[in-house]
Amino acid sequence: MSVVVTGISNTDNRLCQRYHSNTHELLGVSGGSANVQLGGESGPTATLKKGDVVLIPAGVGHKQLAATDDFEVLGAYPQGLSPDLYHDDPTKLSEAREHISQIAMPSTDPVTGARGGIKQQWSKSQSPEI
Image (cartoon, rainbow, N blue to C red; front, side):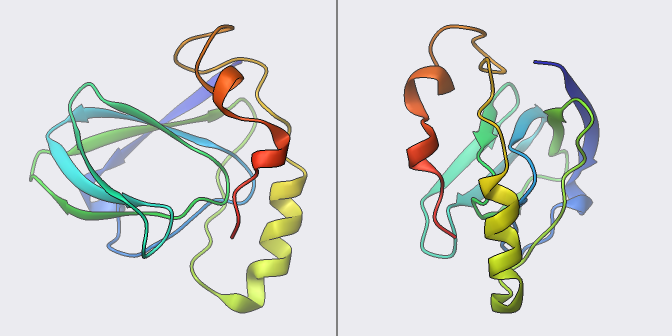
């Protein structure tokens, strides 16, 4: 899988839930640390630090709760895709679900390659509920 990497600084991560309907998102922490919430307002929280990576499926809400001043993260997306941005807006839900249903399963895991990772953990029937 080819990916495009874009830099995202601490100030780009607003303190609100958001999700992308047109692509999965791979985040790699290149500096500092942050507390994040995944899966919506009642989702679990985690601390990400330099060297960590997280793959967020399309449609899964995520937000930064707090971060160190030197927090920096890189976002990677499949070649040719640029993530759209949705927030908790019920009027856009049908549109977002339609976009998500059109996303192809990745042929490889962006971290582990052809074995393991999403190849074992994900299936089309496990699409996120939004």
